[in-house]
Image (cartoon, rainbow, N blue to C red; front, side, top):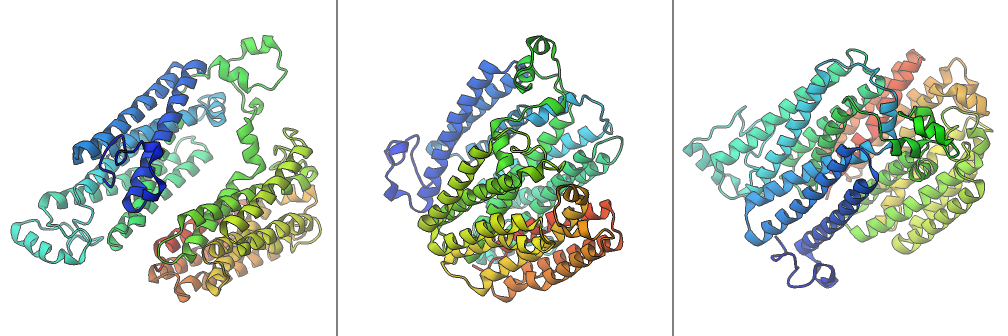
Length: 606
């Protein structure tokens, strides 16, 4: 409500609103409007494109539904401002979730993964209650988001200011005398307006529904192990459960932090992510029709005879041609790059004091992204012949012939150079210098050493641990013990993680001639011992942020518990050098890092 008129902003055209007036709440409100306008334009283009090119009627209808939803969504937002009706704000928030599900479903059914699912047929059988449980969970999450929106607009977020109890009881009392005492004691809270019984009931309904969601998702995970459900589906359900658990933690932390803005925002964002995850899981397990002829023909390799195109009715996974976007994603190692950016962002946030400089944060992240993409491209260029010898990398753009060496060289050098220059100008010279160290150590030291010595893993952990330090220097323009503590955490975390991967793919590495420790250590004793030693070292190092006053006691306890859990799986791996134990250690490492970083962000000392 910082901008009181609509569709204009203080009488200005939305797109001509003076930058000098983008301050305080006006900045957030006007940016929200511009983002909404961009989303509306893109959705219009999407709907038109689907109507013209897509042969599946139901997909075209999804495009129309998305377009209608985004138009109504914008109208509700405008009416919320002009009419000042809180009820319209609730509908505005609820419709946003429906729109998000719709566009996510469209993205999924247009992807190569969907075509692979169709090509596999319905050979995978799920428990008869599995899909029903997923649907029930997803509907409950949607209802939870609606309840949450109602709470925000009814100012009931802190109607019950303690957790897990409610005013010291399992269920709070709401008679007049109790409410009078409660309202007298609420002056210490942000929402100090008088609390009503209706607000307390609404708040408790939110908590009760959260318990129902957790129960249904746990039941879905149990059913995923029944019947003949494939392993990827079990993993996806595990990920969904992890989202729900983290979302519950954020809900609790919203209350413990007295409804801090960043925590409450994360709570809403992860709620939306949980909703999309449930919707796509349900869609992925649904009986599906064969893809359209247009989709089949466009997925076939170039040069396919016309008589084959005329008879194609399904797409075997082996003949699906990746799109240019997918090829580029493979070249820049999009998952690794995403991890680099996340750790850089955490480092920047940890180094910021007071009001965070969002523009400098954006410059630091963008420059790091360019540099990471360039480094990944150059790494694949140097390892082209070796990648062709390994099953896990033989389909990368260079070994598969989808990109030429010349194009990758130009792209890698250009992205790296632009990234370094951008960091120097947009952030500071120190961050750019650290970026150069990362690039050189990763591409020109670690990459060739993989064929020379088993110490390559230890050396390769250095560029992998520098991004959070780059984020720290991007915010502070100096290196300190606190910044080095983030580097040390990433450095030690990587080593058990790499040992698990190297053990799983030791035959591939041997075929390519890489000197990984599991290749030269066939019995695995040294590999396991190093995994355990580095996991032990990670425990005290992970506590440094609290000891250096970056974080509080919650992070200290969380880091300690996570470190003990990580060590447990490393010890299990050392006792039984099996593929299953290696996978468990790898999964533990994947869970450890984002949870640790999440707690660090939430418990950062302001």
